[in-house]
Length: 218
Ligand code: AMP
Image (cartoon, rainbow, N blue to C red):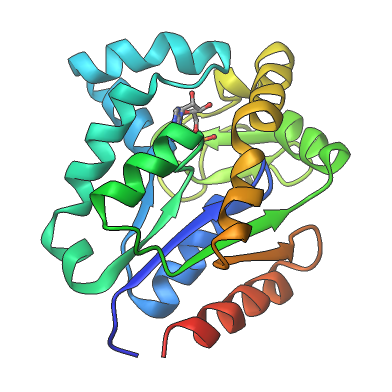
C-alpha cells in the first residue's frame, strides 16, 4: 500500500464526514484536509482570508470558489500530500471546484466516497451538535461534556456553531442539494464513486469505507 491515496469524501453537512475522515486518516496515515477546518482556523486567527470567509460561513453560504480553490491547490502541493496523498473532507463542493481539482492533480482522484445519510437524520444531528471552541471536539445535547459546557479535553467553551443554527442549516442543506449533490453523478460517470450508507454504527461505517479504499489502493 505505498501508492499515494487521493480520496475525496462527499456527504451532506452532518453526515459524519469529519469523524470518518479522522479515523481513515489515522488508519492509513494520510493527511486529512478539511476545508471547513482550514476556514475556521483562518477565521480564528483573524487573517484576511478568514475575515473574507467568515461572513459567508455564518450565513451558511459557500465561500466563493476562487477563494477556496487556490487555498486547497496550495495545500495539495505540500510534501505530505505529495508523498502520501490525502483525504479531502468538504472539497470539492461545486462542479467548478471538482473541475479545478481535476486540472490541478491531472484528473487523478482514485476514489470518491459518498457518505449517504437521510436529511431527517442530519437535521437532528446538526441542530443538537455542540463544538469546543478551543480544540474542535464535538459533543451533542444528548452527549454533553461532563461539567457544564466546558470541554473534557481542553477546558475550552463548548458552543453551538453559528452555522448550526436553524436558518443556516436550511441554507446549507439547500446549497448541498443544488451545488454539491450533482457531483455524485459526475464522479459516478468517471467510475470512481462508491456510496456508503452512513447512518448506522460508526465502526461499521468506518470498516465499509476502509474496505472500499483497500479495493482501489493496493
Ligand atoms: P464544513 O465544516 O465542511 O461544514 O464547512 C463549514 C463552512 O465552511 C461551509 O458551510 C462553507 O461556508 C465553508 N466551506 C467549507 N468547505 C467549502 C468549500 N469546499 N467551498 C466553499 N465553502 C466551503
